[in-house]
Length: 88
Image (cartoon, rainbow, N blue to C red; front, side):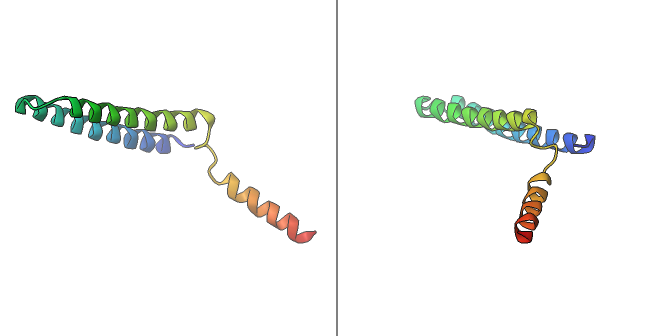
């Protein structure tokens, strides 16, 4: 993977984190200024944080496994396999 591709992926991940984090902070400020019941709000915040952390864990795991290194390999493997089977 080229350096420019890594930078693009990093920027996209950071943009997602920033947008979700900003939404959580804005909603938190609204809830505290309104003084309403915080129970349901806390559940929603933890659900959003769990979703965000799950997303990040998946991206990091795929990156560490090298899934983004050669995205064309499965295609070429299938084409080679089809070519081999058609010869038989």
